[in-house]
Image 1 (tube, rainbow, N blue to C red):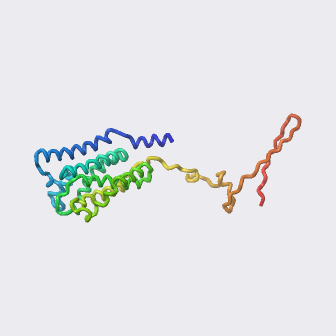
Image 2: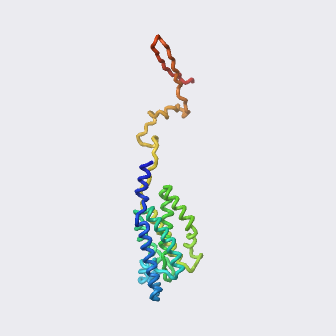
Image 3: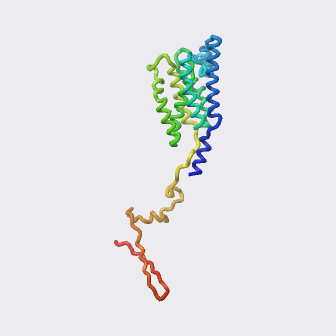
Length: 252
């Protein structure tokens, strides 16, 4: 039990990166938003514009661009929470999921999107939701499965916004791209074996059924046979005690 706890601690350990990386992301997003408002400039044309060469720049820039205060606030809270969860529970894969998630989800949006500028960090948020959910269920490890279910309870309603008819004012293409990307990463990125499965004696390759004391309790028909009774007879001869042990054979 102690070894299992120590093994889990090595993987699930709170380090400064758990909160530093999310804060850096948010600082960049809010920094760009402040520059736009302070200098009264609109950087939306640096977002993803599908199937155009100039629109490819948006693959990198779009997560840091937001239309208004409501847009950026709605994205900031889940982005911070999900990034913290990703780095804490999937530390080895976290930066790859974030960086390549931005690239792949942005590219898919560039391919399938409508002819409009697509901006916002929601694609990355959908990458994180999808990855954390699917990866946790794939590992079948109770801590990560609990995390998956928690994400579903909090952000499960987001799944409706990957469909085009729900809200035409949002980039459902970006949401769908992020969701697909998260699933792909959950499939290809491997996680450690956090706690080895308990292996019973009969599961081991070297197990010999013929020499196992418990298996000897079964007859050739598979019926359980009670162990023979042991009767002890004590005879006294002077000061010497002689013990005779014999076993009664089972009756046919």
